Image (cartoon, rainbow, N blue to C red; front, side, top):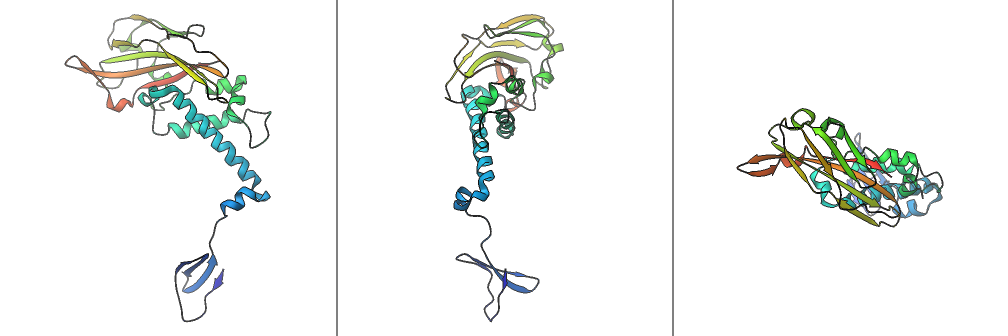
Length: 249
């Protein structure tokens, strides 16, 4: 920082110099900040480069999962899903204890029991977590991907938004390899029921169970509707819908 002497008093930037006024005095300094080239090459910024590489990888892993699930995610998500998933993937990446710093991978972290446990139970819609929506026991068969409900009374065992008259349930199995980006997904038929006091038993069985390298995710979605003149409409931009990961293998 240097003072400016002379008749010409200017404020602003000229080439790599910035002129400004402070406490009645005029000063000049070079443009602040570190250049991108220095960050990419200077040995002093090696930690910055490592952190940036792992940040980008974690963000890409979250996007890969959302993309693999397809349009189902748009029916049950909150406004901060991307940032929440970035944090989740970063935690899983940290479980990779074999790779060098800056090269740790989500896929390697997920190969651990702790990594799978970290992903299990993730709710795509923070406003409608599984534990706050369903209050009935259910069983998951990881061999078939089937989710079974017995004597489920919706009006008593379902937390539903005001105005909802019906709801639907659907299960799905997703196979995803975070390294190769290979994926496959299978859905169960949608079961649509009125919200009343009639006990029902439903079995949501996906059409297949995709397999391969990577992990298998078993998910459940619950969506709410309001029926008017025989037509069911999604309720309030689907903000109350639920999508959760039940198990990770």
